[in-house]
Image (tube, rainbow, N blue to C red; front, top):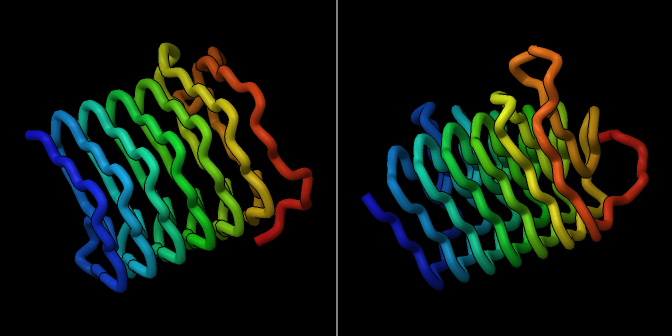
Length: 191
């Protein structure tokens, strides 16, 4: 199954069914590609992913999207991706999204390779961890690449701009993080 969304405006939608994705929800696809979409003002009142929720998919790619003002009671106010092999976000703008748990802007959990390049994340909030970015890596072979992003003025109880747990399986063997040229504000962690 291939899911491709290009140059759409997805706004003002809401879900309360407990699965996810106030604006977009995709499960168990081989390839998921979102390019040049505007995803704004969506909400999930009983699950994860206020704007976008992708789960159980092989390759997930978001490029050049504007994702703003989305809200969830769970993880991933703007974007939430879980149990997917490769997650790539490039040239996206995520602003003023909100999560009642973790990952105000972007939340990624249980994925093998996570790559964020040239994204801007500002004004996102989470009540828990990772106001801007929240990444949970489980397996020792999992890797996160974070390059050339602006992650600024986000808020959370811990990790206002970036929260990374690279030993979620608690075997005391950290997974790999590669990062360079990413601007992260040094503001207090408060939502």
